[in-house]
Amino acid sequence: MKENHRRHFIKTSLTIAAGVALSPVLSHANAQHAVLQFVQEPLKYPFNALEPYIDALTTEIHYTKHHAAYIKNVNDAITVEKIPYTTVETFFENAASLSAKARNNGGGAWNHNFFFASLKPGSAPVPGGKLNAAIEKAFGSIDHFKEQFAQAAATRFGSGWAWLVNDKGILKITSTANQDNPLFGSAEVKGTPLLALDVWEHAYYLKYQNKRADYIANFWNVVDWEVVAGRLI
Image 1: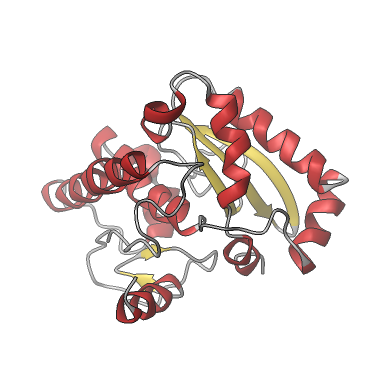
Image 2: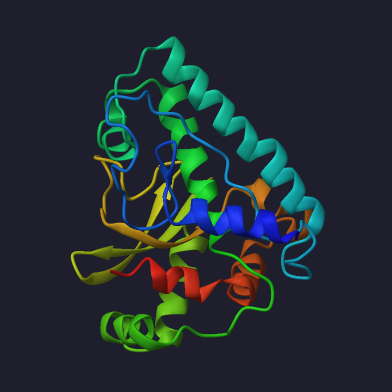
């Protein structure tokens, strides 16, 4: 990736890009009275970088078709429906009052920015430092954490997500249906997202077909633990 693209990604990953946060700090950095617009963040790696665990074609289609469609559709809904919320926090907190188009595509836009930013090629096999300590405190060990996270991802019926969240200093694992996330006011388990795994079939079916468990197992090979640790505050 060209250096200027890399600098742009790092800069936008640490701030709110038109109301879409990639860091766990859901800031009000943008003008409070501006209309919320979701932005598709650039990938920090080429489409083939996550192979052999996530194939290039899946990454390309996932990012350029599915993710791009969520971005367009939610912004269209915000404009047509005159949605008044100016921050991603209030948008998701009030998701239950939104149309299905706004809710589902808003979640899809944010969730995918978060997911793609959580990945990198050649990742370390386990987290370290403060994140490691927090995981061991909450789950007993890294292996137990991975088992529980994998269980949440494998047992999410139909389409959805598995999440690691920070709930006021306590790490928890949860899953959400469709494009919901733990920032939604109606979320069963709320908290600041630290890590997410997309278990919609479009995220893995080209390579893994119906073998979701294999996709989940290989996910750990491409987690960017530095990014995850940076979300723990």
